[in-house]
Image (tube, one colour):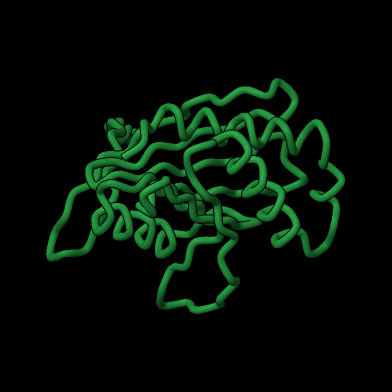
Length: 173
């Protein structure tokens, strides 16, 4: 598998390229295909040892299909990017997690591109954790937001939050 840091760097450079040269795409009503096409072209130009494919857009709520697939020179799948205009809901995040568990040698990323926000949200999944990143559009940098450790119970992945609960105060009369 290709280096995860290298692939994240390539994704960031590709997003910077779109911000600098093709940001008008974000204002279009139906921007998924042109945005993914431009992102795939940028990724392929930066990752010389592979081929980037723009996957057909298939609407199926029961199965996740990636929008961009990067393969190396030996045709091994090394990167899958899933695009959405809105945040991934819990079911979609679980699909990303399942995909990461099945494809341990592949980097699975979710990408939320909301043109009204000053950032893109990137979901990075492994079999053990989900990481959240912001690509800050104005600063053109990637910032890690948080990690969530994954626990499997009855084959259903769930997310654990490490939040301390404050004791409830009693109202005295």
